[in-house]
Length: 150
Image (cartoon, rainbow, N blue to C red; front, side, top):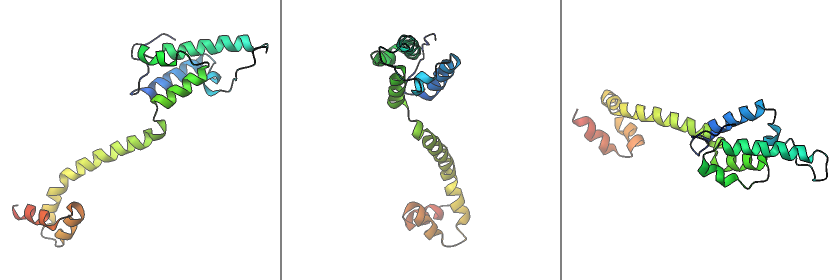
């Protein structure tokens, strides 16, 4: 995997992780990220192959990161350790959905709150506006002083 100048950083972790996962999966080595392939003992006949493939996946991970970030992961022993540490360090995957929803609701709320004065002016003749405004602003005075001028 060629090193990319933008690489992984705290702002693009999800995109980076998905891109890297696709690449490594395409090479048939995703098990090194998931831990499905575990490190055999050094005297095991499969150790040499594991070490070679693990080192290759480690280099793909590190080379896909910016230099500043990649140097923090140079001394990990396995690709899974690098993958997990990068995820722990840069990911808010558990909160991403909530953050995205929060931003959407915040944007909608901001847009709706801009309409509130016009809605209140329209409601002025309906009655109980003071109660309605007290719920929004905590003060009857604000509603009365705002609507009196309009």
